[in-house]
Length: 186
Image (cartoon, rainbow, N blue to C red; front, side):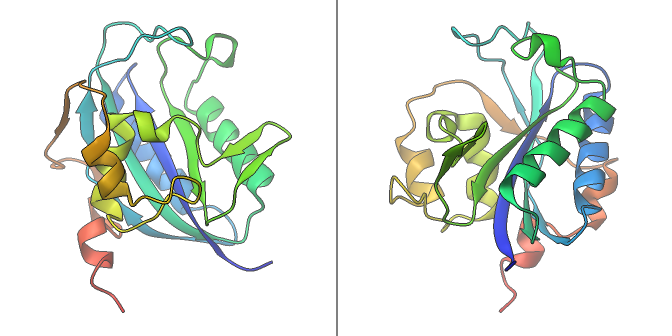
């Protein structure tokens, strides 16, 4: 199987959010047949309550990682669910507060909607807390169905929720490849 560029969003609004995000990034960096090629800054975002979820009032910490992987989409999703569980995610109440939420945002330019896997993530273009770190990590990435770059999607998003970059001091994944260190490689 050939390698695909994948983007995985991560977020936590329960427990030690910084530590949980750091642990998630570390675990994602250890995936077999995969290489982490970038990590966004960490962002704090107010929770969004809608018909699908009520995550409580605690703000989220969010970010995005970029991987090159040979894992199949279903296998990647299964591993993400295992990481969520290992970090204390309550899968019985998926819409509630969460220690860790991992979403496969893009799997290359593939469009997948079968067997419980929907990629690109169906709501990523509506959510500032996803688009902000995604546009930082790879501003020129083009959404395969919408045909717009992450930067254009962020500029057009109607979501008015607050998303603010936080300092990375104290985060262990700061030594891993970040968006600023990988954008300039040729």
